[in-house]
Amino acid sequence: MNVAVIGTSMTKFGQRDSWLGELLSQAGQECLDDAGVSPDTIDHLYVSNMASGEFEGQTGVMNALAHDLGVMPAYSQRIDQTSSSGGAGIYQAYQSIASGVSEMTLLVGGEKMTHKTTGQATDILASCTHPEEYKHGVTMPSFAGLTARHYLERFDAPRESLAQVAVKNHKNGVDNPNAQFQKEIDIETALESPIIADPLRLYDFCPITDGSAAMMFTTEERAKELTDEYAVVSGVGGATDTHVVHERDDPTVMGGVVESSKQAYEMADVGPDDIDVAELHDMFTILEFLQLEGIGIADHGTAWELAMDGVTAKDGNLPINTSGGLKSKGHPLGASGVAQGVEIYEQLVGEAGPRQVEANTALACNVGGFGNCVITTIMETAE
Figure (cartoon, rainbow, N blue to C red):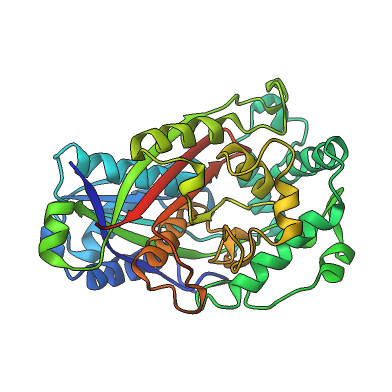
């Protein structure tokens, strides 16, 4: 059964006074309004969230949201796949419609993080690493720094290429009214910012963020009855890689990205050359390169050249992270993968405003941990 997206929403990302329940309710209600469907038509409600217990001491967020939105007695479930929880939510929502079990599924992703210190938030994020790595003080930023140094030296890539990713995504974020950062930066600012995990500096990292986003899924048959503007989820794939990062054959290859994108391409019957725009999980700038290579857009060790040549700019041949990416838009864990889906949906139906590019086929890649689990989604314009 063909699966369609008929409505989306996204709250303002950044430091919010609202707690998680309020953020989820805001996005959920706005998505119901955008799709033009009533709460009593919802069969399934999924909430993508990594760590409501750790951040807020709050569990049962899916039940609370079902009550707040008035979608009872819909089946509700919280989905945690670390920082790829949003993509996992898309996968689950897709399956609920494609299987015929649900005719109308609402997905809401969100996280409340900024009330914790940077150290506390980093520690919560690091809890998804292998216990043997965690006890030695390994964090996501340290993995990123080690991988970036290896990549730059191995492939003779200039340090400026990573800075160019940050510059590009900050520029795109200016045109996203919901982005956490709406300010351009230049190469010099990125290169001279404080070192966080050598060779990566402050502007190579995404911020700690509060926010929520939502998507409405239904059958294509039902979508045609409700609206003239919808997008089709033509392919979705999920995969895992080794939990212990140093056990991988090549630290510059994200096996979960390779496998999940392969599955999504095969399901959608398209290939890398068919992608018009993509949202990639740039929690760190180096991840944009690794994902570009993993999804087959660039050969191994060459993605940095696309950044330097402007290919991935909004006006380039393959715009990447038109939303501003996690780098500029923000990274509220459970919401990030959903927000990626929101962006490619808006690009496909022509609702991206000043970020709009020409696109008929779009891809989103949401990464959990340091490539430990990955969801790749392909969406296309309706025929």
